[in-house]
Image 1 (cartoon, rainbow, N blue to C red):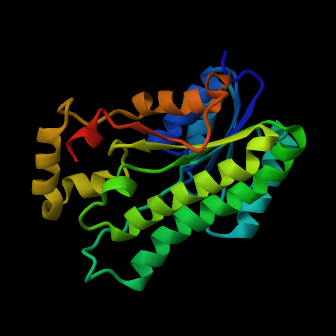
Image 2 (spheres, rainbow, N blue to C red):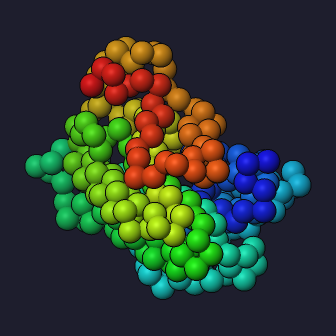
Length: 251
């Protein structure tokens, strides 16, 4: 098992990629914390336990530092010190840039940047003391190419890459590896974009040009995270792993 006896925290783990991650990490021997504001996370944790894994659901509003600190303390007390953090939680508030409201902008920035930073600070001290850690950010191909109607999302995902590279430089001497995964659209969250008539033509054209002519499944994307969470990636840090079926090739 690649993650035997490790404690892994995945934010936004109630559904989509996050759920696939905690399921895969559990199958590889990790004790997993399903962190989400969505109460469906309790069902995810219960299913993992029913299959013989060790999991707990933690309700957390990652845009509030106090909520993050409380969640981290609860996980540590019940599962043990945190070895792996996946900053996966995200949201979208699509609008063309000239129509985007402050509320739409602030909401996306707060979840992706503030929430990721709060969790980074909540776990890093213990990792530094034990001189081992894996921190993975869920970025997006949007960070590298932009996306019509998502200037807030593209800015947030780009900002995450700045955090990855800076944290990797600061934490490498403690054997803490910090990386990002940049998946293509695979989750329920992006279904809003894929099925919105305003973006239908853009999405259809992108799919037609895609090397594999299809979207990915969360379980496929999870394999990339597993590599970065395990000792298989012991000499990899500050990197962005694109798990997008080759969509970057046609941008």
